[in-house]
Amino acid sequence: MDSVWNEKDEKQASIEPFRIDDLPPELLAEIFRCADTTPPSEHKARDEPEPRLFTEDNDRLKTLKNISLVNTKWRALSLPILFKHVIWTITPSTQVDLIYFYDTTTTFPILKFLMDKKLTNYVESFTMVVPSKLPDLFFARSDRATRNFSWDFLFNVLDLLRITILGKPEVLTSLVSRMLFNGGRSLDTGKQLYHILSLDRKGKSKPGTNAIVSAQETPPHRIFTIRPWTHLLLNEGSSIRIYRNYEYFLHRPPSILGHLLGCEEAPNDVPLVPPTLNSMSYIAIFPLCSHFDILIDNLPHVDKLFVQIVPQNDIMKDSVEMDHVNPADLWMERNSCHSHVMRRMLAIEDDGLGYHTANHPVAGPANQNEPPPEPINNWDLLREFESGDYADQQGWDLAVKIFTAGANTGWHVEREGVFVRPNLDPQSGYGTALPRPKMDGESGPADSLL
Image 1 (cartoon, rainbow, N blue to C red):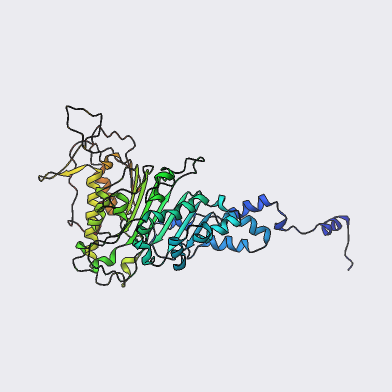
Image 2: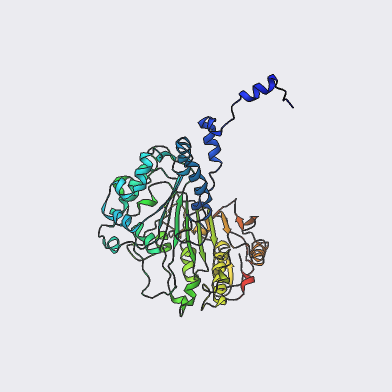
């Protein structure tokens, strides 16, 4: 049977098939941005630190890399999106370069690539992964301030919103020109410990307003003042294996926490946290209460504090992790940590007769006829506290009950896991006596306070 050919069929046959590559570059770039998801340095920062944390199962990287391999046009459009968040794994040879060379292209090969491709203006976050130990020569440098040249070079090229470092505790302390003390005790953990330190800010500053301290006054902790950071995150991962040590409570885990808060021995007794900080996140799974108290006793002046000390995964079902560990010890330390937080938030003090609320004096104008006021308690200035442990429903319910027991604490529940004190008046005090919360070692896993 002969087919019927008409004018409509002729017009359709003359139309060439549409190709996605025919779209305008601006529209193609917008489509590619749909593959740009939250970077691992943000959504995985609270997970257990390990060298492959930010690169393993990184769907964002896989998708954008595949797009960049299609053709030259797609590559040019996708590279600014792909390198919006840079992850750089430092090799041992690069670590040596960090000591001896101060040229950007030598010290940071990744920077040469970014500059050659004209991508520096697109980079928002930079993650450094240091999977191995730094050379001993790095620790032997007498002029520790020279280590800051690398930070200056990095930030002279990139105006970052976030800088993240994943490495061993001794690596973190070295990169911020500090020394790590272990208290002289051998600590058996059975594996390498990795921590995460991250600094970020909400937006880029105007030209000339980035650095808090001038170049002529470069401190040994340049990274903390080179941008007006507003948030600090420290993730110390799991401490479970520490509990397998004899008299574990006498050990001191390796950590940069004391250096950040300025409560170490000289010359590490100057706080590293910048004055621009307004929020802080601290993650440490089952930390020793003696270590956790470093944060409790030296809380910086921040409006918001996030704390998580209970795992959200199944690590307690891991026979290797729990080998020679008594779970009761974990819960006892956890309960002690939570109770110490509650005491500070509710201004509870122990006068030997029981626990009561206390009003902390606030520094005011100097008066020669009066003794100088006591230092301001930064817990009194905290406006929001978020617990990452609220999944323990019984513990969360108990905390809510204590906070809403009728006392004028100023705190109320905003949502699950979050207490807020929006109308903070440090001079007004926080009300009458509160029910005494259960203290150290008095309760089991279900009786936690947060």
